[in-house]
Length: 221
Image 1 (tube, rainbow, N blue to C red):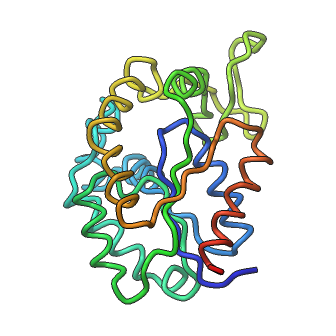
Image 2 (image 1 turned 180 degrees about the vertical axis):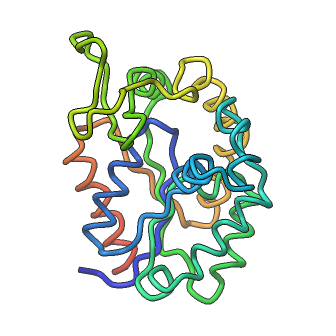
């Protein structure tokens, strides 16, 4: 394995980033840092940050840069991220956040930024069909053959559609992605730090593409 991988995964929500990041986290033995999960945990726990973020998340908007930068700065300062590296999923979302991240990581720069590329129409279809266990968070996909009421195979909790997974909320987030997050491709691409990986193949094929891109960035030449 390659030690000290420091990686950013960019891409439209629903491109399969979360699942692939978990696999990469196990493969490279580094923490998967998902700002979305960190925020949702804060909402569930009713923290001050959670209360501030709840309305924003449910409406499909983006949480402010100041909150997100502080959240990430604190997380990257923890021992596991400092010593082993990390995979950032969901951050940065804007050029301002990317510039702040460069300052945070100046002493140990990011190795590679990957854009997991999946077309918008496929993303909408994927997320709109997603359901989640209210209790344990296990994800499911609608097939039309679900039992009613739909309960979780893992813990027996109710399986529901998250408010921010409705088609309208997904399209609002994708509109924000196009206007605010897509410029990251230019920011990183112009500096020669971006690798684009086609995310429309099977999960195993996409995983192979991702590890090949990461290993090439860690071992140039």
